Structure formats: structure tokens, C-alpha cells
Image (cartoon, rainbow, N blue to C red; front, side):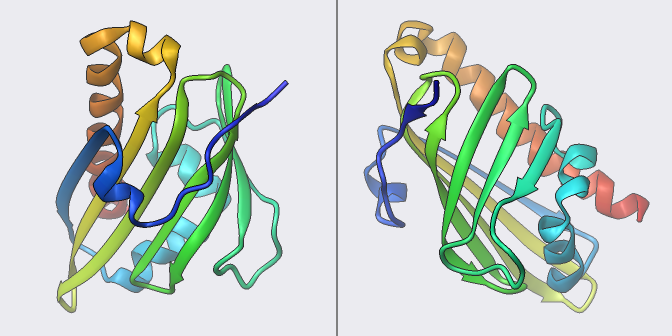
Length: 161
């Protein structure tokens, strides 16, 4: 049975009790990177821990799009509330299979540095639920490491393409 998460918006990036920001430079255009973001299978190749992605809304994707993401024993349901093609998207969790957060937002921003280089800013903000709070600094460190690894893995993935 899924656990409901709070509906939040972009302001949550500034009000959440926890926030992780990773910034990397990628040798690719924002358009090329955004194409990877729209490809359900590609997520399983570059984001360690993701075992499946299903877009539950038809293309073209935009504000209001939904998807589910399988993370092995964990599954999350997402609702996109910002969608700026080749620039930015943001979503919040609507439900999770395990109750580890009350609310979570992921914000993906792409900024062209030049025609072949993009600055990727990946921000995750969340309010932990009781199980994650009880894990203390260990749980926070694990999430911080996961999100940091994802940003670096995207750099490597794009370099191999």
C-alpha cells in the first residue's frame, strides 16, 4: 500500500528541512541531455538504483505529467509541476512504497555554458518521515551520496554517448 506524500511546489526548495544541491558541467548540449531525461530506459543506465521508469502520461510531456520510478524495493510516484523543454523540470513525490519522506521535490536545471557544455544543477529538497529521521545522519548521508553520484553518473553517461 503506497504512502501519500504532501503536494508541494517550487517554494519547497526554500522551506524543506533538508536540501541537497549538486552542480556539474556536462560536455553536451541542454537539448541532448533533455532527450536523455525524456527517455525512460536511459534513467536505468545512468541513475544508479533506478531499475525502471514508466511515464504514465502521454507525450508531449509537460506540467501535469506523471510517472512511476522503481528503485528496487522502493517505488515512487511523481507529478511534474515545472516543464521547460531543454531547460528545466521539477516534480514532487505523490506517493512512495516506503514511508521515508513526507514531501520531496527534485529540480533539474540545464544552463548552456557554450554550444557543447551545459551546467546541470540538480536540487533535491525533502522533509523526512519518522523512519528516515530515526536513521539520523546515516540516512541523510546516504541520500546525499545517492544524489551526488547521480549527477556525476550523468556526466559519465553523456561522455560515452
